[in-house]
Image 1: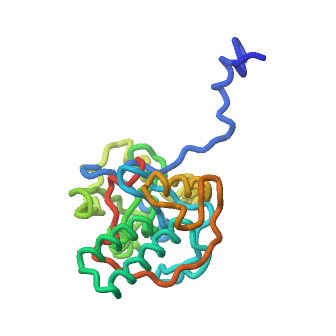
Image 2 (image 1 turned 60 degrees about the vertical axis):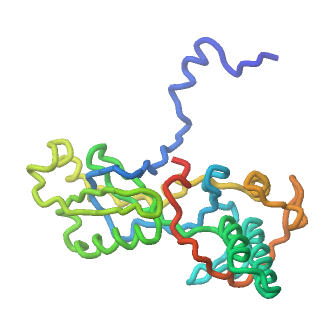
Image 3 (image 1 turned 180 degrees about the vertical axis):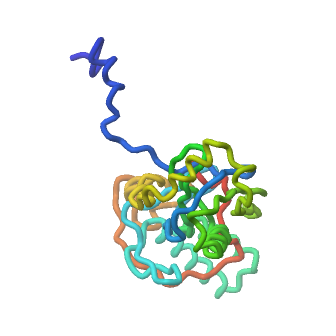
Length: 266
């Protein structure tokens, strides 16, 4: 049996058909980035809870995520990462009740925080340079900032283009969405032509599904090991699955909810 799936003419033709695959609309939105965009709707947004550990595990979303209430607390279906966090929060409470110092308790809660899902948002815009929809990843604070601007100009979205930008780094990163007042001066001919296409089609909400990396439970367990968590404390070993036990409402820590750009895989 050959090690090659196709050769010669068949191999040359293999790149002619991408199988109908769609390109993910998510784009890099690092500090210093600027886009000229149109906004199709204030509702072109999706919330998710991502899991990651800086420099160890890239951001992922669980294949079967936990059910959360309006405040974001888990009601059922806790993932193995949620269970790891809850176990450590319980350790912190035990340590505190036993008279451990504040620093010792905080060390445990900081570790627990690493395994918690962090609230994030994906928001869609229409890129005037490419004439295509794009998606950027945002912290809750950043999403509130952009949403406020979009709501302010809600009745004029079909007539006003915007400049989307990010400055600063880590948790101090700031996003801005500023209206472009003089389109004739500030937009190129191509950008103006693309802006005229803004209302041609609404953003396809299904495109959000292609923006994030999804991990099943086996991969989540492996990621816990990579992150440095002792999975035997959950009764797990590589290849074993955990029973899903919903944790109680976790303690809050002094660590900010926002995660930095460096936590993201793009």
